[in-house]
Length: 323
Ligand code: GLU
Image 1 (tube, rainbow, N blue to C red):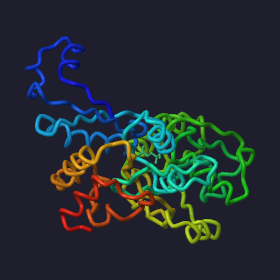
Image 2 (tube, rainbow, N blue to C red; image 1 turned 90 degrees about the horizontal axis):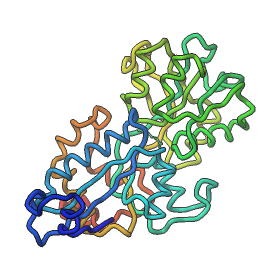
Image 3 (cartoon, rainbow, N blue to C red; image 1 turned 180 degrees about the vertical axis):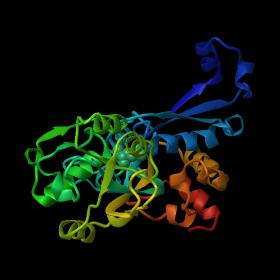
């Protein structure tokens, strides 16, 4: 969080005090939100929060800026080291960032705080229709994009690979493309399959399914049953049939939740302001992305959250009588 006095801001911008629309005594607080690739759902999620917060900034003095990033694991690390104030992250990686004990997060971060959870993120495997891939096991021997380091899907893919006893040599070729690059890689026939832990519908999966012939691959069976049974942040979910071109049937896979997180370094007043901007305008928030259609506040303050709620969020939820 950076506090910038208006005088300094006006000097930097070469503008006048009047141009900000704030009283000369006010301070503006800048808050950065880390998201994901631009064709995912995290990036428009950050945009939705930004829109609702920033339109009230003349009254409350909080201004949000959204950054496209490598994803969950990057965001959680950047929050821990103060490079970002807030971020969107998968519930599995929130769990490990707070508790430690995973190679992505060897150390616990006791300063991590939950704000709310969002849409479900099914672990989504999409293959070229002409590749002989019908089940997750069929990925063995194929060219697979396992995701960029720092993304949530890369981490979750590694967990699934470990559960199957696989490593990178299981595939004929492995790539580490970012989510925003993988639809094109699939349709250019540079890879046979891509993985993305993402809400639906997402721009990335839409891009792939409308550009070339594809098949969504179910991720279930005994190995996944065990993963879901052993880990509180995993649950089976369905990618609805007909959501994407060429994929008329429901597809079963497991998934996590997208969550919105910050740290104790961000003040209660700022977190309260951001939470209020979202929930005071909740009907509008829900309309800002189709993946938000079924969100309910009572679930958003419980589901998928391992780190304690930030005190500023607790203040708002208590006022609403939600806790
Ligand atoms: N779940 C992905 C990640 O953690 C990002 C999904 C998105 O961009 O919507 O990196």
